[in-house]
Structures are given as structure tokens and as C-alpha cells.
Length: 276
Image 1: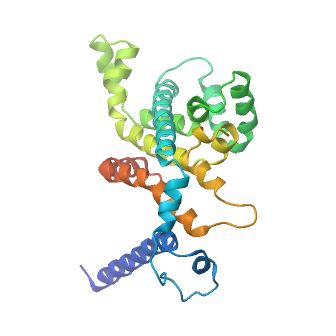
Image 2: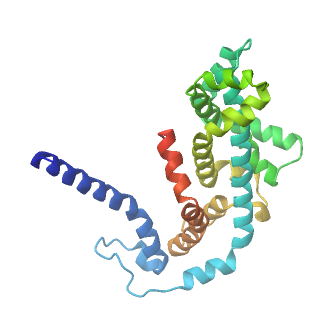
Image 3: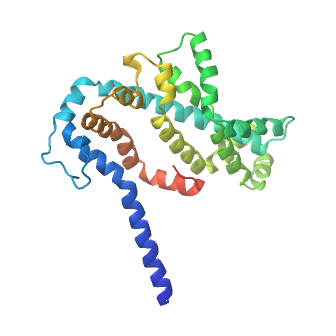
């Protein structure tokens, strides 16, 4: 390795370290604010970073005032069903659009691309009217409804299936497999990495979703973590230490899920070439 290559490696490593620190600053600031008083959290003094006295009353008050068990349950159910529905429908649609020849395939794929180009906020009113017409507001199904199908997932799985060689299908056909058996036993297992990536994206997007849960579920027993945190923000004032404490508690499910499925997360993101 030449001296220039060593220098470039050091520069790249320093840049990556600085970028990592920059990304961690908001999370660290949230943790520090959760242990401050309201006065300390709102004072304009850039040199006061750490709290003068570490207090835990913010966490106890938030836990007493908010039913986190119920919020965790609603959030995890929404994430679970959205991931299952997205992976299932995207896998089927992606295989059909990527490997099967039928009339109107180009039109169907154009509609998928059109949905990806249109802002998701445009669909909120029609989706709300559909849920309201069947009297399913304030339910888990209402939270899952926008994630029953995913244009991004369909596109991702279509590209994954198109990258597989045709010889696999021909060999399966010679062995007597029909289309369903070829898809289920030959093609689908080979796109597992793309499915994992789609599951990761869907879970993160569902966890961060704020507008739809606030619109469709107004019952306090059907709130998710994002909408419950948003309701803590007052019209004129806000208790930022308690808000940060509740945000820190709300992050625990995703942190635990990441620690458990860390290997699958990294493989899925690396395989798809995407970013969160």
C-alpha cells in the first residue's frame, strides 16, 4: 500500500467518524434533554450541554400519564401486519410483472411507477373515505390499510426477479413444475434478501408514519407511538424534557428489533442498495 493510499484511507475514516458523530448528536441531545428541567431545556446557552442535576421525574411522569403497553401493542401490530401484507403482495405482483407475459403488463407496471411518483398525501382523503364508509375507523385494520400494497415494494421485487436467470424456470418446467410451484419453491427463495430489505423499509416507514394514524384513529386506546407523541406537543408551550423522555421510551422497540435482527438488517440494506 502506497503512502497516498494510506492517506486516503485515513481521510475516509476520519470523514466517516465525523459523519457518524453528526448523526448521533440528535439522539444524544434527546437523552440529555430527557434528564433536564424545563428551564434548562429552553434556556439559550449553547455551552450548557449536560444537565446540572440529572432528574428522573420526567420518565416517571410520562409513564404514569401514558399507557405505553397499549401504545407498544398498537404500534407493533401495525408494523407486523404492514410488513406481512407488503412482502406478500409485492412478492406476488413483482413476480407477475417481472417474469410472466400477459396482456396489459406494461400498463400495470406504468401504474405502479405512477403511484411511486405521486406524493402519498394525495391518497389520504380517498383512503379515509374508504375506511369511513365501512365503519372501520379507530381499528388496527385502519392503521394497516395504506400498507396493504406497496408500489415501492412491487418495483423492488420486480427488479429482483428480473435479475434471476431464465434457466431456473426452464429447468423447473422440465421437472414438471407449474407456475405456482416454480414461484413458490424456486424463484421466491432466491429473492429472500430483497424481501428482508422490503420488510426493513416497511417497518421503519410504518414506525415513522404520523399523519395517517393521527387522522384515522382519534380514540386514545387506538393511538400509536408517533401520534401519542404528537399529542404531547401543546399549542403554545411544550414540556420538552417529558417529550424527550417519551421519545426515548418510544425508541426502545425499534432498538430491540435492530439488535435482534442486526445481521438481517445489514444484509438486506447491502443487497438492495437502498438507504433508510
